[in-house]
Image (cartoon, rainbow, N blue to C red; front, side, top):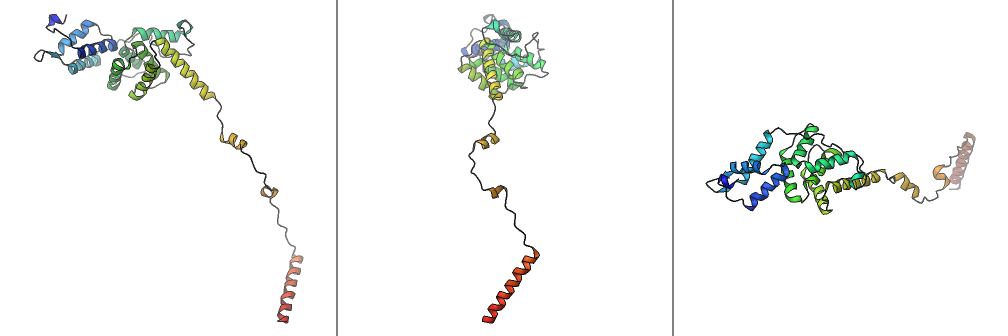
Amino acid sequence: WLTKKHIPTIDPALKEQLTMYHLLYGFDELTLGEWVVQAYDFSAQEVSLKELQRLILTKQQYKKTSQPENVATTVKSETKAPVPTLTNAALQLITEAKSIPPMKYLEALKQEKGGYVSKQETWLLQELVSRSGLSNSVINVLINYVLVIKGHSSLTANYVNTIANEWAQKKVSTPEEAVEHIRKISSKATQTANKPKQTYATNRRNVRREKLPDWVNQPKEEKKISSEKKEEIERRFKEYFAKKEGDS
């Protein structure tokens, strides 16, 4: 088709870019081909990747998003794999994750939450599709995990890339494995939260206490001297000092 439009070849960089757009948005070959023609510089005999990117982002910005019906908004207490043991909500999430391109899935979730897809999120999804090695269906489960289960308002690069790297390193390759992984880490987090914490007061009870004298807790009261006794003591002092003066 492109040959008929006088575009004889597609270089590796362009092919990689078109593959990414196909996976991310679900565009078919003819749709992508039309944008390639629009981005083709006939004087330079090449396709401008920047212009192609601009065209697609512009088309997406003004295109009314068709929201998939019944997009899963939660994953409730999934049980262990295999799939038949999963809850209906988990099964619905897995089905949608397999059938909807990541960008469409993100747009649908954002619409349900009353938000919109930012440019940063668009670049982030392109990066995930191009570099993470995760399948589209796993990326969709990741999106659901961040926006729905964790309740974030947007996808942030640091947080999403951390999760994507962990899942890639753990060889999470299917949405079923992704759901099971989420179930395990959620269960572990719940157990940690419910584990009783050793308090300072508890620690104090374990410290050996030295036996203290009774007077620390119950100090002895000073005995008061009666007025008669006091006068007697003063009289004796006067007699003693008078005698000392006589001797001198």
